[in-house]
Image (tube, rainbow, N blue to C red):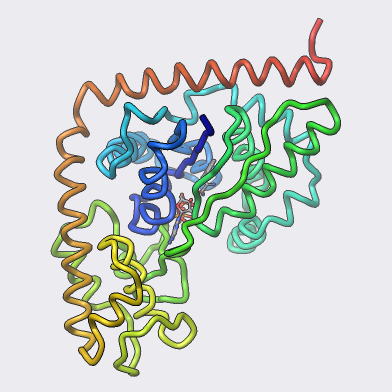
Length: 326
Ligand code: ATP
Ligand code: LTN
């Protein structure tokens, strides 16, 4: 059976963008693939995280994954930092990655510009991500479009390692949701909806109250064309809302355009607010059932056991291939 894997970093509360870009794709594919989902807590540390908040957020992530439909019976669910082999694998992969390659990553270029005191971890971040992907022979990596370049780097590193040392890694591929690709901020619809965004008005957190969600959608930035039409260039706000509703309500964009032909933005926004509100209500009910359950720890124990075994095997193989044996 082929394998899929994805991780999300606990730098803030999970957003609707995270759900659409990564989590919902895993839910869709979990019946056909052997699936791995984790909390990328090591990746969160490239910027300072308050330790108490981080600890709580990690558990919330796991419970929310399950509430969103990630089935613990079909997925290996774990916390990245509990697998100590990943850091070791990462160092060995760093030695097969050039500085030029790492510093050309778009995310590194953007984030290093935002903060002159960026950590070295920001540069090596995609190589740790390559370890996450390569240690268990992942075939497909469901991610949002912003992570595509990192998955491609993982593939290049794997290929180079295989050429130097003999076949060790399967070559992974990114899997991008062709429909939504990227959910944008409701206030600034040219910008990605992001969990570490400081202004909460344009971001739908999966933990927002239903009232807040509806109010944010009703206040979303639109345009003055008064036409419910998918046109990312000229109508980015309306296109974003069409994307969101289309995915959550399982309707095509064309279907929605036809349904709201000649209708006003107020009516359309009310519809989108109901769709998202119902979704949030449903997942939060499930989340509240599991967040304090013992079952959550059992799931994590089983998940990390399997993940560590696979990582240990791959680490030993890498060492052998590289001459790190007695
Ligand atoms: P940060 O604000 O800290 O950069 P983020 O909200 O961008 O966080 P990540 O943890 O970097 O989230 O991303 C987790 C997954 O969710 C990745 O696969 C990413 O591509 C996807 N994702 C994040 N935001 C969006 C979005 N707005 N639309 C679609 N996919 C998204
Ligand atoms: N960098 C990713 C999180 C992440 C990831 C991974 C995603 C870490 N390791 C492996 C897919 C596969 C992000 O979304 N910011």
